[in-house]
Length: 207
Figure 1: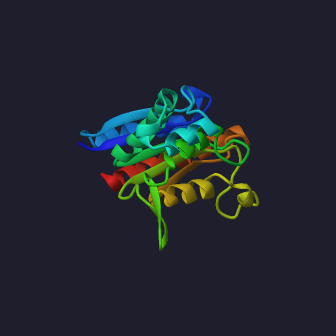
Figure 2 (figure 1 turned 120 degrees about the vertical axis):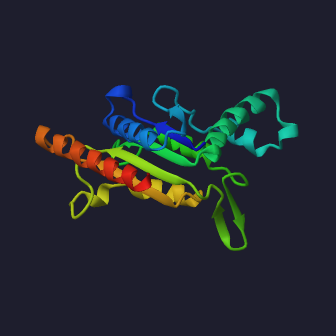
Figure 3 (figure 1 turned 90 degrees about the vertical axis):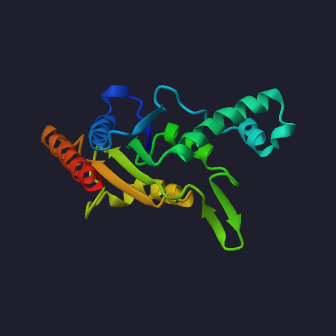
């Protein structure tokens, strides 16, 4: 049985365009991979807490020395790491907010980025430990940021996610962009159609 972790991060729940396309991807993936087990981590409904000093202190304290409060904080962070460690495939729905990712998704990344667990330092530099997994990222964007768009330099979403995922060893990453959603009704329809076509092509190629 294969395992897929679906990370949704929009504040708009089922009305989110990134989530709609991601759920269509998930439906197609399930049809072509009937043995897949899916875990949903909905950061919009249940956000991971933004890192504070108490979180960092908890995970940096040896397990046998943690207070009860630190054990609770560490367990919550450990659960997020365990989900991604167990997954063979990761599907992330990431809307663009102010040219980058939602703060809830950033908080999740902060929790799963842990030295000695998901990456390590060696004499050769940093090494990501979450290797051998396939990642699909569905984005929703009001404007157009790909190709030769003059807005391309404003895209702090895909570059950041590629960098952080790669740092953790997740280098097999494919982006599906639903773009132009706020330009006009026609542009929104075309943008969603392009994203749906990409979903179909990618799932068929992975079948």
